Amino acid sequence: MKSKRTSPLGAGSLPGTGTHAGPRATARRLWQQPLLHFLLLGSLLFFVSALWRDWAQRLVDYPEPQRIEQLQRDWLAQHGGKLEAAQREALIRQEIDERILFAEALRLRLHLGDPVVLRRLHQDLEFLGIRTPPGEEIRTALDMQLYHGDELIRRRLVERMRSIGSGPLPEPTESALRERMQAQRERWMSAPRISFEQCFLRHESGVAERAAALLKSLRQNPAGPLPQGDPFLHGELFQRLDEAQLSKRFGAAFSRQLLAETRHRGDIIGPLASPYGLHLLRVVDHDPPRPLPFEHVRPQLLREWQQDMAQAHLRQWMAALRLRYRVRR
Image 1 (cartoon, rainbow, N blue to C red):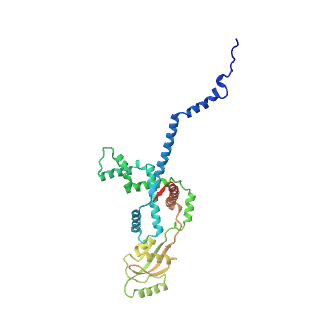
Image 2 (image 1 turned 135 degrees about the vertical axis):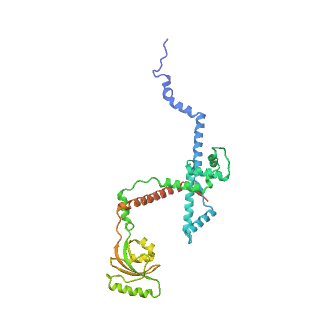
Image 3 (image 1 turned 30 degrees about the vertical axis):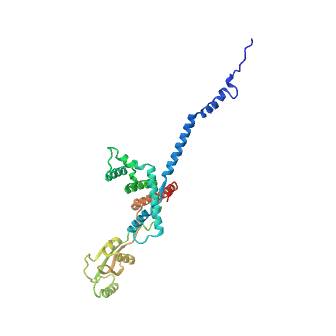
């Protein structure tokens, strides 16, 4: 009796069965498992729920009418004058931006690790007279969301967000700072300094005529001794005074006129009025403005460069953040 021959590959190796069909069959059986459907559905629901929470958190309210009125009163108290429509809109935009920054800080949970915020929440609980079990003060304050009603906490978190938005700044190159100095070269000049001697005349009847006569005498002999005037408390000779020093001693109008009229050593100037009287001046020395050394102004150049870069970075970051928030009226 002949035995039945079998395939050397085995019965399980026929096309569509056995070894080649195993992975597909396993995947099919796995896909049909209710547990897998449950896990996938749960993951999808979790993902959708997270998106919904994130979407709900990115919502701020348009400033209330009473808040806008308060902003306007604060502005007028600080600046005076009249609040134009454009300025009013700028105040509202700034308030909305601060609400966005505050909401983003809460979304990032910055308040949970900020020592200033946590200390303030503890103080709020004490102020409200709310008693909690020992060690539960902060948890209670957070559960009650006391941070929403505390202006100090709001300002703290807004400033932290602005700091984040400004970002770490790279160090500028020396050439960049030198180019900045060159572009603003009129700012980086030494203050002019003037040395002069004077003939002082008190405010009294006929002082203008007396000053005109003395000025005529002085112009006739510009290199000679100064005419005799009235005694002056601060003396007759003043050396190397800049604009600030001149203004402090003689007044701003005196300082501006003297600097505007002085050109050379030996110039005769006056009469200039001050709160004390009239002054006839002869310039003894004049140091005109000169470019300051780069090394002298580099620290200020660096500070201003960093401030400008931080503000530019913050504006870009804030513009992107606004796009992710909705304002509810």
